[in-house]
Image (cartoon, rainbow, N blue to C red; front, side, top):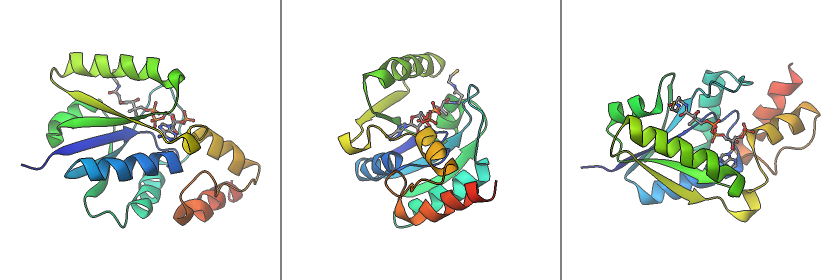
Length: 161
Ligand code: COA
């Protein structure tokens, strides 16, 4: 049976750090589903459809990775796709507290659900989607923060605003 993992996030937009986690997860699991999800405490910038399109470009060369979107609870999605685990990236100690709470809440809601943490590479630890959004808003070069294949699309999004 294939071992599936779900990599959830808001991906608003996908960054080099996210891409690195996706590629590493693709080597650890038979199949990775990158799931664009809703974080109720965040107002989105890119539409869910736009985030999906960007992610699909980034994973185009990875045959065992698919992109999906889900508007509900993470545990319901995990149950639905019968995933063996959820993957999350950890950038710094500051990520740890939230991630631990989220993993514990999820395992309370779905007993047996495992969350696997991958350490972000040091060169990506300062990158976040909000850094990308702010840099692009002020027309800075975002090519050091997002995968090369989507840098122009991200910039274009802000040029049109
Ligand atoms: N490299 C670079 N940046 C990274 C990163 C990495 N490896 N991993 C995370 N980040 C950044 C993201 O860019 C994002 O930056 P931002 O805050 O500036 O936008 C931030 O870290 C965290 O984003 P993300 O990993 O996308 O998580 P999130 O906190 O936005 O969303 C969900 C988390 C969507 C998985 C969570 O809210 C969820 O499960 N929602 C569904 C409802 C649910 O089940 N809730 C829990 C139980 S009640």
